[in-house]
Image (cartoon, rainbow over all chains, first blue to last red; front, side, top):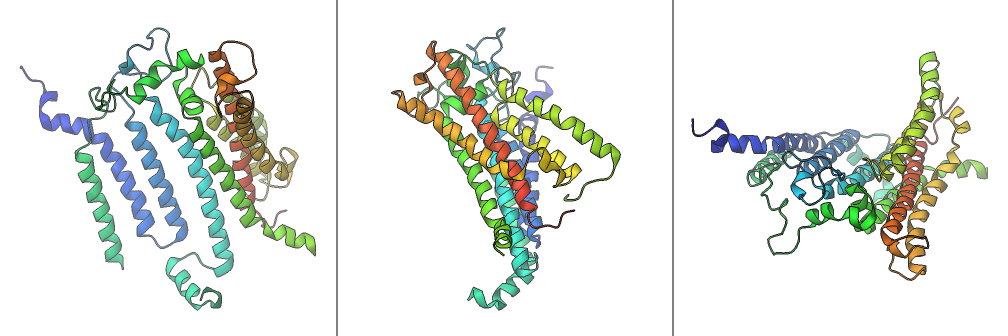
Length: 137
Length: 103
Length: 145
């Protein structure tokens, strides 16, 4: 056997890309929640799922084969950069997670104010009540 | 109305799949992201961030040095965003207590 | 969420575990140089320790541990520490946020080590204060017992 099963182009494509497909499925689920659902809280939960999918996509692009965590190991040294995974994506996503939590807090505060003002959180009824309200001319 | 929503969803899925076909393999050491020099001949940013934190800041953890030293402005901006979000929640929701105090 | 829980296991376990979570969060913040960790992770764990007692014992009793009015000033103090480090290095002759000009003794890599430590403490305080303040603001106006 001169060629192993890993050298067939289709297998190589599948092994290299299946990680992206999981992230794309999660992104589509989050987008489904944002676009199709009518309740405002469900739309916000869809936005959170979309955010998590984007963070996972960045982190999965940082990996390298047979590489270790991005802390300098005295036994390996720093000359060979293919032995450590990429630290830049992890740095960017650390702040993105906490900023996502804070932004969700602001969004839920706005939802509380909307509910106190109009009495509903369903999108179609909300538009009807906003049209009938005298202040919103 | 529902048909338009599902059509937008299908279009989004199709664009994602089309974009994913041209991505490099995950973990490939010869991808343009993981090389030592970028396409223009300049040193690649991730390889600089792997080689130099021990020398510059006496710290083994590369992620902390990139977050607080090489990209410190971005962290400052993000922290200000967190503070602003907290102050927005404070201003939107804490109105009723001052009204009750004034009575 | 606003009322306290009368179950014995939840009350006892949450009150016992919360200080240990806080100590581990301090370890994560200060050990960010040598192991995975740093300011954002430790700050979120500190906020989790405070919100745990707020969930289990009710909003009124948990004011004994961390009053509601301390949250936003602590958050602002954390951001002030971050910007203050930048201005101190500008006052001592360098650029903004250039840690090599901080007034401590030693070679410049040691200056950057200490500068990163100040930054991480500031970020941890800010994240803890703001996440607790957001939780308290979302419960504003609800009847409590």
